[in-house]
Length: 193
Image (cartoon, rainbow, N blue to C red; front, side, top):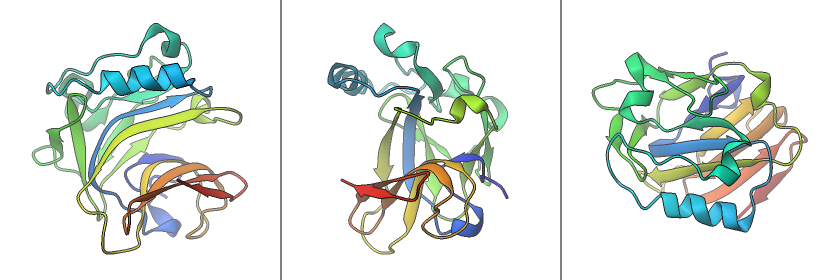
């Protein structure tokens, strides 16, 4: 199943609908819980809006970075979403046109997902198996937050068996009706903020 091991923008397969519609930028995964200071530094990094120029993490967060997809031009050769963390967790654009998917983002260039079948399929890597404290982050700009009750995938890791996806190791998603974020963990529990 496409996207069953790891994906950005679409959960694909049996737990569809999981299609995100809008722009995603600067998706990051850390193998530890970030501190309030770390989060504030990441937020401050978002002050740049230059195309193709994402600022890198602060030194306090770089050692724990296991996945970083900037979606900037230099990190997107021929539809490959390069992992800037140094861990080699590259992804591939699927069902996305390179002429329409690249848009201005919060931190450089972002990818626009059509809400139908676009996704970045992540390579299978044990570095993405986050079994203890960890942090997922992304700049999210949905096209709409009203309408369908789609569980729109931001980033996901694990196989899928149902709409609630109890087998997902982790699944950060947005309910596009109302814009509530939800996080599903390996045991099937859900927390909403």
